[in-house]
Length: 174
Image 1 (tube, helix red, strand yellow):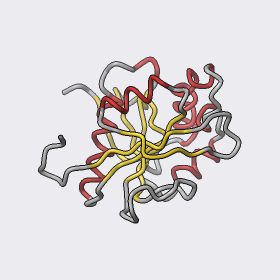
Image 2 (cartoon, rainbow, N blue to C red; image 1 turned 45 degrees about the vertical axis):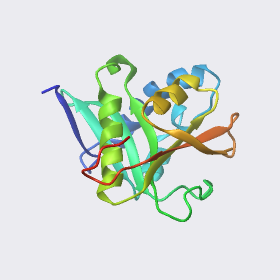
Image 3 (cartoon, rainbow, N blue to C red; image 1 turned 60 degrees about the vertical axis):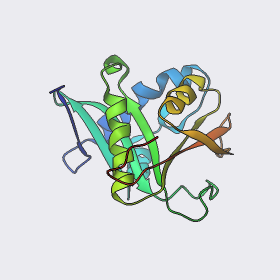
C-alpha cells in the first residue's frame, strides 16, 4: 500500500546499520546541543539497549527507514507514576531524516501503542528532552501528557516523562 513494512529486528539485521540510522535520526538533536545517547552510541550500546526488548524496524524498499523499541515496564530510573500498574515504555523512536513526512513515525507509534493494548497495559510512556519542544508538541498531539521528569546521568538536559492512557483493544481513544 504505502511500501512501508514493519517487522521485528532479527538475526539477519545489522546492529551497525541500526546504529547508523539512529545517528542520522538523532543528529538534529545533537546539533541542538542535546546529548541523547542515540546521537553517538556505538553498536555495542545499541545491542545492549535493544536487548530483551522488542525492537521494531520500518523498512521502505528494503531500506531501514525507522525504528522504535518497546518494553513492558519502565526503565529503573523512571519513578512509578502509574500506581504500580505496568506500562509499555518506548525508546529510540527514530525515522531517517530523508524519509520523514511519509507516516513512518506515526506507523511505529501506532504499532507500539497497539502492542501495549494487546498486553492489556493501561498506558504507554516515553521520555524526551524538555528543550526538544518540537518533540513535546508531536507527542502532545498524539495524546501524551507530562507525568513526571527525570534527569538521566550524564545528560545536559532534564527529560519529561510522557504518558498516554490506553483504551482497551476495540475501544476508541478519547
